[in-house]
Length: 174
Picture 1 (cartoon, helix red, strand yellow):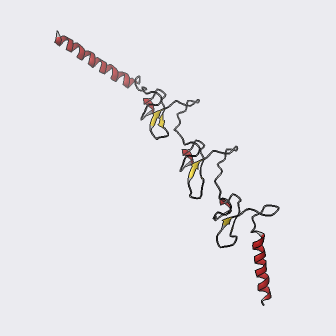
Picture 2 (cartoon, rainbow, N blue to C red; picture 1 turned 60 degrees about the vertical axis):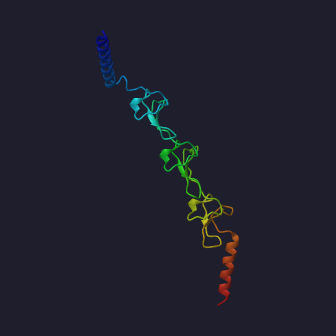
Picture 3 (spheres, one colour; picture 1 turned 30 degrees about the vertical axis):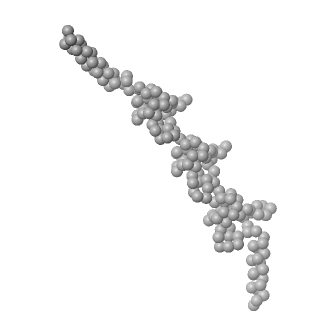
């Protein structure tokens, strides 16, 4: 009797194994993980969407409203190296130590780069908030505010006066 019972359980076990293998090969058991479960491939998830989360662990997530399966992207303020890492698709240098962060786009869907404040060292007009980079008193270029009625990029008046005085004294020395 015991031999017959063991024989029955062995047959049932083998039959279960064969049925499970068959169902898995047909795709019926491919999708078995719920939202939030750790995964390696899309086929493991009921949603068929397996992507990296904020901690860079691949998990099953819901598809978007338009049934897309999108990777997690960094929100506003996160450090980044490339625009594709950010939700806004906007990764910009935000300070003088050349740190890049994800920033939001403007109303016109533009990524506006960070610019240096007045008095900061610069090498071109484009680096400054004022769009004005000149060597005011020394051989070092700095961001300065635009001056005059038309807000042009000129040296301040005191610099012009000094230059005019030097030129007039040079002309009288002859």
